[in-house]
Length: 429
Ligand code: NSS
View (spheres, rainbow, N blue to C red):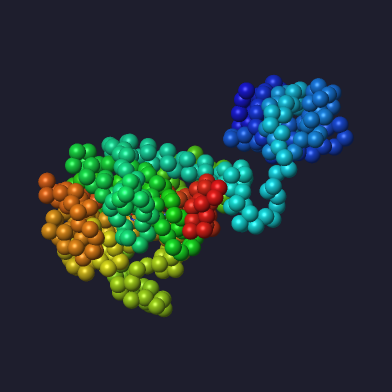
């Protein structure tokens, strides 16, 4: 048994090969059935000729519908008309799982495809996206390993709101209120005291009440936290990590990216250093361009798009006003209206993919902020403790994996960057 890709590579020309997979296309003409079979590695044409296989197998093959699973064996011959340049002339064609009429045909609505996501995942588009995503995850892990970060496993059930109460999923935890994690950040902060540099990849949950192209309610969150590192060092970590991911994905997934419309040369250009622009300058620029934008406003999708639509590499916007960012960030001593923080915007208008900052390491300042947030302080005692026992300058960030994949794969909507998207209106299948 070999993979289809091995056959397409030409290793089996003139020899016998056995493959297994699912029927992608099938038609018969006279005494021949032409089936295109796919497996995880690729597609190949199989010709089933009457007389070359046992009669029952030929009869079955002529009646078989797409998406049936099959084991087939035969001689591999070169054929320039076949997809991939080779075909298998079957001497065995065994249907393992007969398929009913496949419900997905051309021109189905987006809603129908989402209702049938479990089947639509077999499409070449989604298969290619998920392969790119797997390579993104592999590259990220590889980078953290090479750079001496420890991987951590923070909890997903918590009593802390890290990113504000507005998007928390709450639930009854044996009679107490608990939340699904919005971010591992606070727990990663606790871990730097013994590991210096940590990272994690976990699901994060956000009860996003609006429908947008870049929000899902459950996403994969890659987060990192480093002791002894300031906001500038934090940005360096981000650009080095993302540079590595882009380089790796460009070499490992060239074909998939091409199918999705992404030229790998674009990704090869994603090298550090990325551009940096202050929020002040971004605010002036947006005003000059006629946007209804005042200093102190947050950048929304529209503004982020404007900032990056003509960019080829990611752009950091740094030092946002305090009122639009979270309580845990460190004050910018050069301009106390702002924090030492950064958002990383993907090029070509895709917008924010990472949020990061230096963290407030002063106990009393952090306490003030928490009081202003109106949270129940008893749940933040442990977090304040971290500033009482050997507080240390530190920084970290969170990268939304699906946001990164949306940009890399040039997707219109973030839901296609995850196999079973969760949105305000969808939890099935
Ligand atoms: O809210 S963030 O901007 N920042 C944090 O959660 C920090 N506590 C992370 C940290 O410093 N450890 O979210 C970080 C990223 C953001 O840039 C997006 O890329 C992604 O998480 N994100 C999302 N992706 C998909 N869907 C939704 N709803 C979403 N919200 C954030």
